[in-house]
Amino acid sequence: MAYKKFTASSEKMAPDPVYHSKLVTKFINCFMYDGKKSVAQRMFYDAMEQIAKKMKDAPPLEVFEKALENVKPLIEVRSKRVGGANYQVPMQVNKKRQLSLAIRWLREAVRGGKGSPTADRLAGELLAAYKGEGAAMQTRENVHRMAEANKAFAHFAW
Image (cartoon, rainbow, N blue to C red; front, side):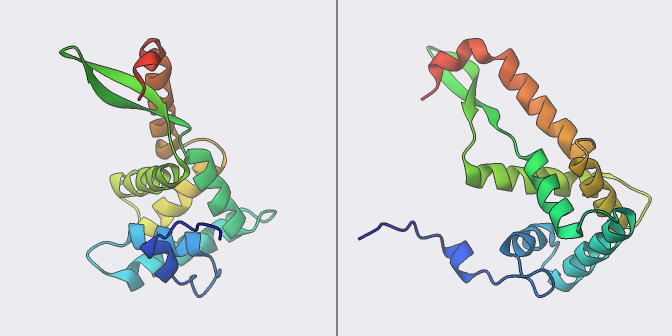
């Protein structure tokens, strides 16, 4: 009998009503603030409409998925204590953590910007990430740069 890893959150999560995607549902749930899911959904779908207007050649769901894929980190540094000293050890990131970090960095980039409506900032950040630019991509590059700088400590990986 094949072993299937049980994850409670993914089993219960229903796909979103517009795009029928569990990834969109996960993003909306992570983007939600103070339990206001309808507000988060409205902001996300407004951002997707803006993306559809700006990007005539690519469907908005494809832009969203590519943006998330671009922001996902491949490697990160983790602190490890060896002989009384702490080292920043570069390690590969598993798929689930890649997704959660990408969503978190996008969310923080959107919430960090001020002055315009959140849906506008979300659309802008998703388009920037789609093109390999923006604050979330900068965070990813910083993490990769830190891992590259500390690769001398890779032999401490556990």
